[in-house]
Image (cartoon, rainbow, N blue to C red):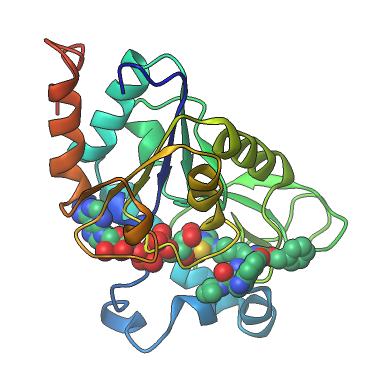
Length: 244
Ligand code: BV8
């Protein structure tokens, strides 16, 4: 890491697991146990049952709102401060990297707390007004229902974010894949682009994934354990006193 010119870190839901946020692989709990995320996180589901999908997002927002960044998030923020050329790209929509102090986070799939208008052609966006609303509020501009500002299955990723992440993947010397099952594309392609471009590949995940066999280093541990350990190993006190 000390000699790497540029480091790319790719994260998925597993990096927030130790903050108490269910991953997509975990069966949804409670009243959501009978739904699959792939069935709710789609434009069709929202068009068909806007209140149901909205309530699912409100449930997730409340969990995130009560959650705190964990030592894995904080170690990544400290790493970014001590490694000049590190880029953090996340599939997560919970904003916990930013709350842990990471900057310039590339959010491939949007953010839970940004709403936008569901009407095609109306680009109105608005920060989520209330976590208690049971149905989608009307767009302040055109009156159509607002929707969560996240990328649903079947929707394209934000062009600029994907372009930045793809460019970084093709030019980094070292790529970390942390807490992702590597099953959702095109985000899952990024680690492979880096590997094919000659980057050293590090995977941090208690479970094997399709990337494991191609990784140069595998930490079969939770991110909240491996990332602080990597940070401590980097030098006398690279964590600049970060409270891990
Ligand atoms: C698109 C936001 C095209 C919403 C999400 C090939 C190419 C392109 C597309 C496709 C393709 N094949 C299939 C597709 C379609 C689809 C797709 O990939 N489907 C999958 C199911 C096969 N992709 C799409 O639809 C994408 N759009 O391609 O559009 C297009 C182009 C132009 C014009 C029109 C259309 C959009 C995908 C984005 C969907 N939105 N999130 C929301 O959050 O509600 S995806 C969502 O699920 C997450 O963001 C994340 O990406 C994914 C879940 O994956 P992970 O983050 O990895 O989480 P997971 O639970 O799976 O795994 C957790 C891991 O953590 C596990 O491995 C576990 O072991 C580990 N873990 C657990 N605890 C810890 C831990 N690790 C470390 N520490 C711990 N403590």
